[in-house]
Length: 306
Ligand code: CP
Image (cartoon, rainbow, N blue to C red):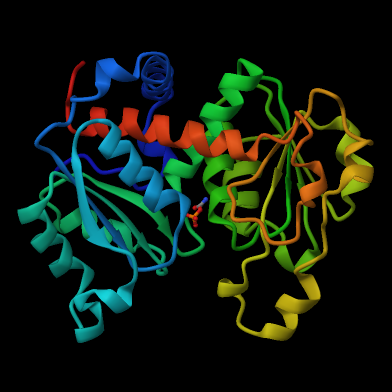
């Protein structure tokens, strides 16, 4: 079976360091990598909408000199005729060298990985995992903070359905003395498989609060998330919770001058555009780091040495 990336834990701490070094080298020396993947094809199989992840993977492969193909919705694929994920990946393995896949169902990428002849990267499976968003987040923190140890990380918003949150927690618990403050309404608290099975079992320090203002001064990182309409079973609950947190200038005045604001994007209302010019608001810079770390990951999974 080709090496596949389903979860951030599929990448060791040492490999992550090496990926981030490669990504930084690509940023500084793009010409050196411009033909690294000539003759290679990346397939993007997206059964669920995406702007950043799909186009970031495509930009990454194009900048490495490779080509891309794929579909951007289940509706535009033979999934509408009943084709299974397992059959689709067997077919794509005939056309492409590597694949990024997003699917609304938890575990769908793993089903693909088990049948695939090429590396499969999970680009988001339901409310479960989104490992390359985590690589993006880690790369951003490393580039702007220098390390992961001793950070107090606040995660705010939809912590129940937010797969980017679940993936990032899994990756950060591997570093010394990282503390978490989870800020959410009670309906959107982190799931028990993260709280009980990961954090409590491993003695990781965390607090759960509902008021953002109370904890802002103590944070090194604030990871804001969108309340995800597509994961709610009823519209009434979504409407009640969607604007629970809005990060604006007044709240930013309570935070440390060194706190960074990250967001996987897209945002809806949870970050006011009035703070976009604040140097601590790094969510668009984060998108850029995401492309470079995906370039590094593609090179690694295709065993391309530059
Ligand atoms: N961050 C992220 O996954 O964005 P998209 O849904 O636009 O891919």
